[in-house]
Length: 271
Image (cartoon, rainbow, N blue to C red; front, side, top):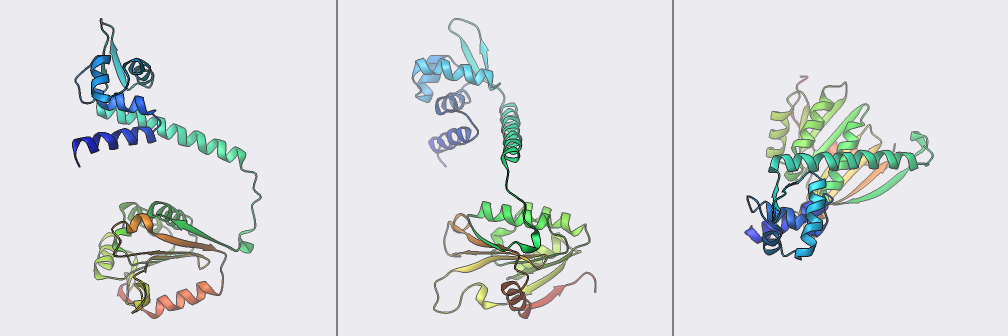
């Protein structure tokens, strides 16, 4: 990544974290200087000089910039670690405030779990992983997870599974390759591990190269199935999934039987 690309990305991320464009550009400019005047910030950032003063005032209020009251005034960015901690606290506070407001506006009636029948679609690796982690965290009796795409094996997933393994749950983890099952076994030695050779997970001959990326069954009534294009360089971003709840029979039973037909035990710590 070139210097210009790095600067552009940093500016965009600062905007994602709540800064306006001119504020972000001024802050990045100051990170390229030990200190600087409004003129120097203008020359590096391209922000109109008259707008630099407004941006700096905001950055000072946010605790991101320090001001030396000389003539002309000189500015400097706070240490990067201090800046990231400040932004992290601000972002966390906003999320907590948002959560409070959303809960106060939630007037939906809670349906009885046993009677809920729903199917939803999800798009993108981040959204799918978030839902998968939520389902694992909420499991009451059983977790069955089959992973086809090795890229899914995030540290966050392992942390969530390790936490689940501490409770009295039945946990079955399957992998399409030796690499996946080996990693499951090394990181979660107390959990039952399987390897599956089901060809339909990665597509049948003559079909378009779409594959199943992950299958999660929780408590025998909650289902998450992801799919992706293995040869696509942006496969994680383009992953799609179907999330279904309340399916006590039918598709869940069928899917469980299809999966278990292709499972062979690799390691079972209880044996």
